[in-house]
Image (cartoon, rainbow, N blue to C red; front, side, top):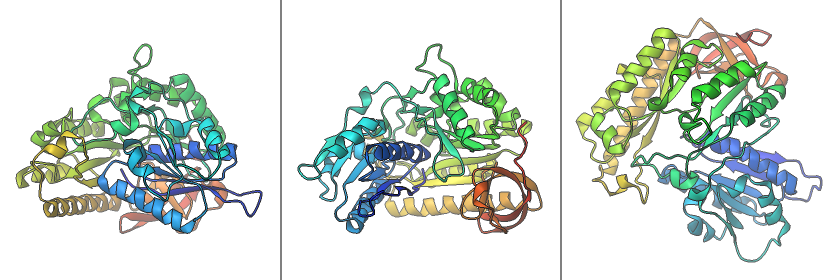
Length: 446
């Protein structure tokens, strides 16, 4: 998961008052939940800084702590709180940080009453610690937001938690068991976001392909996606965040293959291209399943772009096993890679397995990244000269429906941020494209 820092600020009525700030590190789900935290802060008066931490790797935890220390140096008198997965998994460790005013759990952070209670209390005294047993949480409340600030696309949180136990992953201990937002609440949220001006919505969660397993009737993710596409008037594009290919149901497959409003981009949680390593990871697919899935989808939808998460240097990985991961990029036609050097997380089975030398881990991660970047460059080159659908973002860039980023030659007016337009691709600059808007109107939804 990429580490993404986002800041949400509220202009204070009193110019002497501290600013309200939320900084989210990590995945898109954290980004979406950061908006819910911001709304809770604003409702409570907004006098606080919150770091929404990430715990996916040891490096992510280090970055989270580093961010907290930096913010304390920059804001010596502010109330400073930590929440998110790293704080949930190690609440006492974060509470011991002298920079922090308190630590808030992943469940409590989304409740407006949490922030109103905390900010009503005196600012001095013992550190505040509000972290519940996340494994006992059984419901996920929908995060209903009329818009997500200045962001081009809006995030639909449809699910939280994970019931799988991959041997390398500590995230279930930060997020709790898998739980789904009911379809009626997801649809209501989607309609609000489209009405607020977002042409593109991103379906997000911890394990979104498990959506519905805990709901009455056990609907599948495909049922939810079909409802969103069929029952959300004005929605131009729907995008899926990372999914588990082993859980793609028949309805979802058909929508990916045939519905043009579902973005032609699939990001798969692959992790390795070697069958023995996948078995030791306790994944539910093998390399052949990845190749077969992509081939079957591209037979129906040739323009489909594919991204994948991959781990380099998993315990017991030999040079030959790693070579299978490198080869999978070509064998499956992967266009984008998100590479993690293996990071042993305390309490996970993989941390107790025979470890690969750290220098070798770093070298393999670099090789895998280079392989992924070469695949991305080749993919982008074949887009030059085409006219493609894109969502306009801030900073003079646009995002194609296949996830490619385009630097716009003529920066669009701010009013176009979040809107869908046709962009002509002119050239490639590194791992990004350059182009221009050629149709000053929304792309028609089919």
